[in-house]
Length: 208
Image (cartoon, rainbow, N blue to C red; front, top):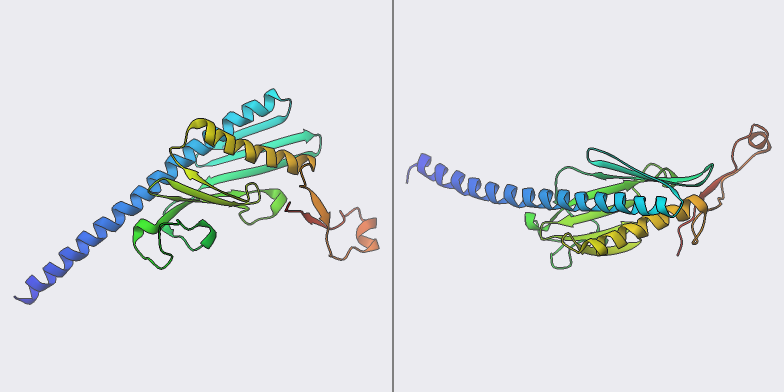
């Protein structure tokens, strides 16, 4: 076999493997997007119910970002924004790994897509993380839901119930109920800071 023939044989194997890998990654991205659509729709639906219960709840969607906010009273507000992240990658968070997949496997079938949540109450880093796999399994952990899992094709009532948990936690943060709220931090607070009207140092309390 000539060099050219040998090289073409090898490159065709590379082509087959690349096509397979990209196909699996695309499936993961598509599944993650499908879950994000259902999650966002569920949050919008529960926002409507929240308003019927006399809360000031707003769900605003812009492209791949949905922002959910609650006002328990003037000045008592909480907000979370959920964003669909482009792409898929090998899951590195042990809590979010698919139980049926080895953490050491580099097979793209073990890749996950992600949806992240950010809240001003929790600082700049993501405070809720969803991992979604191409077979429809999703897992999450964070401030609003400590730990949960499900399937992209779960019935609407199941998914809406999950979204209700998120909305309820947002109410907790706004109204300081349910073990949520803030606690005094160990940071220093000087007389000069107090005299200048600077808020005393507190930090978000995570319910146990």
